[in-house]
Length: 162
Image (cartoon, rainbow, N blue to C red; front, side, top):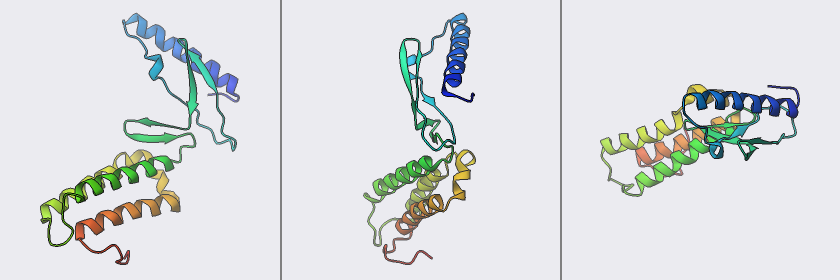
């Protein structure tokens, strides 16, 4: 936390050295090459900095993935919605490529398809649920759910969304 990038850098370096001291005391080490920095800010120009930790230069990123949830530097989670919809679409296409569209899959197979897609789209929703306030995110999730529904019901893609 800080008002300027210099304050943030100093705070990060101090925090990492404190953590590193504790970890050395319990005979553990930080993997500096795996360390990532996300600078959360609401400033219009995107701020970037590079922090030197343990001999490795770590530059700030716009997004990072934490436990399967994409977090961006504005905390609006649009990148997670994009990521989840893309991942769901890939899963739907992978599963439906082995199923015939007309007269083929049993209801148990259709339930599997629906549950896989829904699980991908809903994963971590308490963390990124605020993204549903934007029309863009809602429309994108609706498109992903529509693709799933079309595959489950074996209808043509020209059917109305309702």
